[in-house]
Image (cartoon, rainbow, N blue to C red; front, side, top):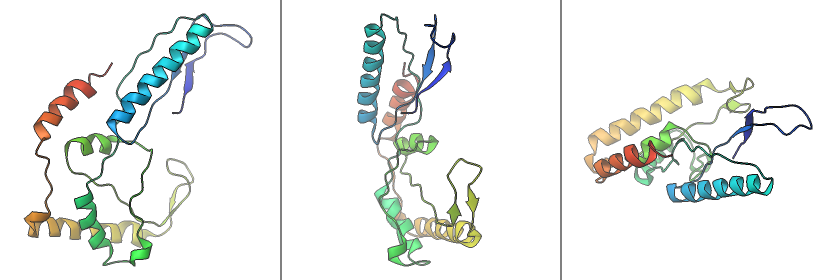
Length: 178
């Protein structure tokens, strides 16, 4: 959660007529996300009530939690081992970051991977690629090898048998979440 007051309204030591607080909730699965959202809404309502304030809460959808495909990750892992040692591969990283790949992973088998060779914080001016071969060439080799493996070995291709039902739920329940 990273709250920010976008409309502070008023000045120091004056209770404003209106203040707007924006925040987001992240979780590693949809059920935990909904549960956390309910708790945050309850917390904000109770805090406002305790201060004698009225509170309006408007929920809008963000990104869904990333759920990676273990089967596709294994194919990628096999291709990574052609370029580096097993000890150099970090597996099973769970991140609180979110993005549209989380939405995609709800519907289709998805992976997110990367290579080392960068310095600085992500999403900052200090972010720099320090190993172009590893970041560009080796990543391309792994992706190309993975695509070739999937095309040559249909048994490695992962599908979602519940795609249409989940897509309907996504469009109705998630994107219309209020």
